[in-house]
Image 1 (cartoon, rainbow, N blue to C red):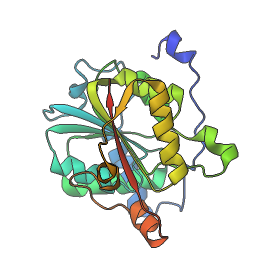
Image 2: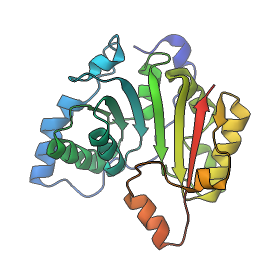
Image 3: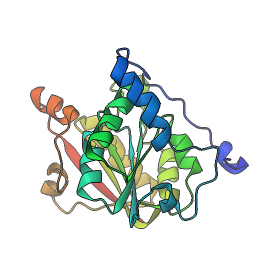
Image 4: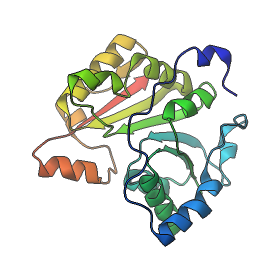
Length: 233
């Protein structure tokens, strides 16, 4: 259960869609069969250590919020099998896609949550994560909707609590206003140090970066991307 102090810090409403096109037979069957196997149950207390979420031995833990089609998460999970990956995605169609990738790859170092990421963040114990990835989040481009952006003071507080000292928060976006928004919010928060030393540090994709459909769309539409890395202090 989430303690009373955390409940007083209101969980932001989830504003995105949860369903797109209806899932077809095999897709629906896969979701029904595989989701319970990989789903994190917040009704139970976090295991001690948290690595016990996974049936294989893991040395590090990494959280990806809003994994979309799952291309990045499954690439990293296969690339680094000694890291446990937790993926959060409320969109049913995206969850089905990721589980298809997981099944095909036989990845056992993946766990998922299919609702509001703030609920999972509040469930996680202090100082348990080595990295948080927030990659191409919904930019909410209209100024009146900026308050819906996931990067906020309260969510940075959440990140700071669950990240280990020296752990990383990685953010990627092709929307200039959201990049600037994130830089300003992390600066003002005071608990995150931007690691960039020059422009190439944040204009160059992360090492081993697999191109995602969001990045491909940005390139087609003539937008460049920024890749920000912050260290938890």
